[in-house]
Length: 275
Figure (spheres, rainbow, N blue to C red):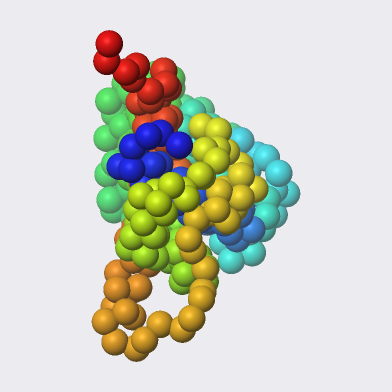
């Protein structure tokens, strides 16, 4: 295909790894949507931010934070996760918190007694400090609250990404075992096929879908043939499965971006013969 065994084998491995990464990430996203993992992670983050204070429930009952909810939940356990938000704008969190603290009736200038009444010492100290630094400026107080929330959500976002990566790895490992996508075996077979001129893998587009990925995998030397011998071959296969699953951690965009660079190496055709 490229006139180079190394490039052909590299292309095959990249397509293999990219396809597994794409399929596993798609399954992970489907699971995240089905089980509302983003909304649950956000709720956990807000709960941790406010140390589990009852303010969490009041904020989630506020229309600025949870516009799809009815605002009638009397406990976090009764919050509908189907309606709970997956994202909260920092300014909406700040304004909702001010509304909850003031009860919608207390003027901002008289808000400090409400802050001093908060039972959690850490949250009370934090909010009172922000209020004093705002020096009577409601907008400045809301800005501090929004920044506080935003910095906390950065850490929660990092935790969610690590969780998502772990799930993608688990799904990739399950796919590797189910279809016997052994990176070591695939590499060996691709090298043999390429050397014999039998390797003609159709290169997918740079932004393939799941169907394209499955089609590409169907052209590779994967799947279950004869059962492996329960000795060194099994350890060899386990290592290959783990390598394939680990490749998913780089993400499909990385592999298919790399695929474009590899295919462009010979995009101008073969070198002309010397005169």
